[in-house]
Length: 453
Image (cartoon, rainbow, N blue to C red; front, side, top):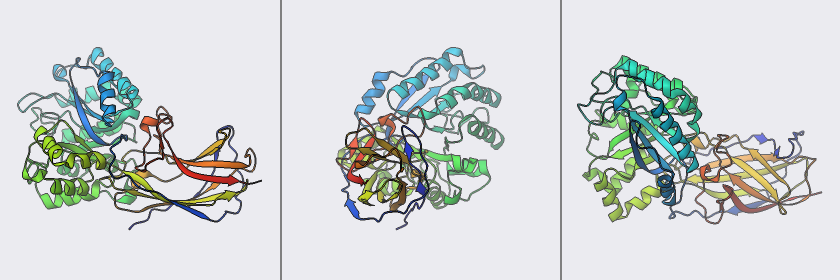
């Protein structure tokens, strides 16, 4: 198995005062704790899983907080927010439309959710979309709202083009290379560089990038166009070609298998077919690293999975499912020295996280009067399924402002966005029983460290 290691010494962040001191001799790893993974429980985690689609027609259909809170009660944290802009195919978006979109983001944030976002004009083949100048103008109008609310945008489907925004049947030739490239460039420009977009077929990315080589690990997460374009399949498991998603099936699926290790993949089914059988569905979701899927479509597929029991596995394994395997650590350390720690984790989901994510180790004194946290340099987006994840680090204990005593060791994976960093709903929960604190978004590892005189 591949082992991902971190060898960096990380300075402590003291909540009352930051104190960076010279390196002292490290202690020795003297204890190990082994953890049990929970492979059965379904629980909420951000930016992954089954989603529900909420559709708005022009200025009507705002999001309702109670509806999103009901999703959370079902362990769902993701929605697809679809905006049909039919009444604006020949004019700018209205103030009322922009206000509704802004308010929707506030509701999403209040509910502790995130959205996959799509805009479209046409709700069926033969219905008109908009000319390219109108599309680009609408995107410019949306830009400040999207930048302000990028914290609750999981990813963006490029949309706008053709029927359902799925990049076919355009009445204004929007899928032609010149127009398509303008739309993609505009998306990458108006979104923060930390956010990705998704195209409907692999051939579209080939055309946009003029490149058929899959994104490589060394180039992943570099905030370049290549690294920011992912994929969605809205006829997943529906036919050998997924109703035209693929032309050269083997070549394109091989490409996606490599690409989706580093960019988001999701979508929906669109018809019940032999390919939806659990064994094949599992293989496809695993090979293509699926992070999300529509619970509402296609109902025949979802109901079949519910009846045969596969839906429970889908709920658990879409996206990431991270768990601690073991921690090796020094049981005691003196102020001014380094505390060595080795964490081993596994990912039994279908994919890695696809947005930036912090990794924090925290020490809290028994009486709660002192606590420190340090950010590790590790990137959970590289914590791939089926690969052993090993983090070797040493944590520096300040020589001053450190009271001797017993400290509990905790681990947290919060959202790095300042607006969400302290909200436990947006922190990743590990699949280990008895560790998670839903009030703080931290994991109490059941490990104590003695800071000596």
